Amino acid sequence: MSKKPLPHPLIVKTFVITRKVRHWLVGMTVIGLLKLASLLPANAAIETVDRLARRIGPLTSRHKLALANLEIAFPEKSAEQREAIARDMWGNMARLGVEYVFLDQIFDLNLENPAAGRVEVDGAEIFAKLIEEKKPFIVFTGHTGNFELLPIGAAAYGLEVTALFRPPNNPYIARQVLSARRTRMGHLVPSRAGAAIALARRLESNGGVGMLVDQRFRRGAKGTFFGKEVVTNPLLGKLARQFDCDVYPARCIRLPGGRFRLVIEPAIEIPRAADGRVDVPATSQILNDKIEKWVREYPGQWQWFHDRWGIKHTIGKRK
Image 1 (cartoon, rainbow, N blue to C red):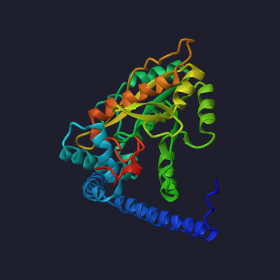
Image 2: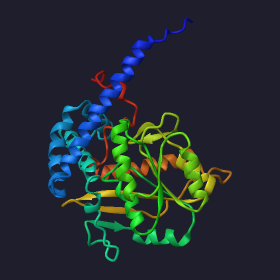
Image 3: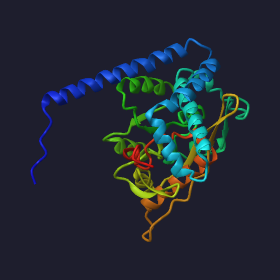
Image 4: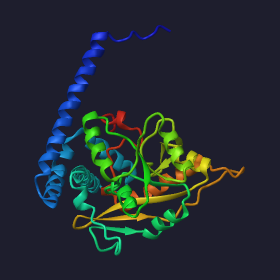
């Protein structure tokens, strides 16, 4: 077979420059809007971007992917119901973006009475338990509600968690987001080469790590999500096997009135193979099942524009 000819260097250079310019334009627009939002009172800014996103989001190409994903997850719902969920998602995403600007204001947690502030906590006793035990542990969550508040909540109780995160593709937005995250979110590990080693070192020193587990991972463990095949990052299962540590589900739920509930649940039972070692694929399926349960409960708070099922390339070909 003849090899496919490589693109001309000038074409490659033009593509790279075009991408950099596009990233700069989008990045400066987003950063400018966030700075503009910071001039408003927190509640007014958050409500304004929510309303705008519900109008603008449906005009983007990602809206088609969101609706296609919703059709997979909720075939029993009407097109109108799925459209409403997608619009809720855009509002949630807009809130998440502008809430970076107001983290100090919106994170109102009363440690003496966790149900009294703007942020309430369900499972505070587990934070205390983890601090007392001084054992390695893993906390997992999904892209639901304002998931960025979880490590801040843990830090408020004196529990430091090293969080694995995937930086945005746009380098300008990534720097802005990372700057906001670093203010109160403890140690951060970008999900690139070397991330697994950094997390393992943290667990080796009897620390805790946090992971988002609901994104597509091409070389992951096969399983199902909403009944359709997916691949899931096996890292959590591998770390649980290596360190034989407890694994805790945690999530953030948006409540009416701009409030939040942070929930940390008791440790899950990790499945094991016949030889007693952690069964990594079965563990990945448990993670999928837990995230699915959360999403079914609050579908408008999950990020449906993720290509979780790997169907993006089929959009436009679907009948």
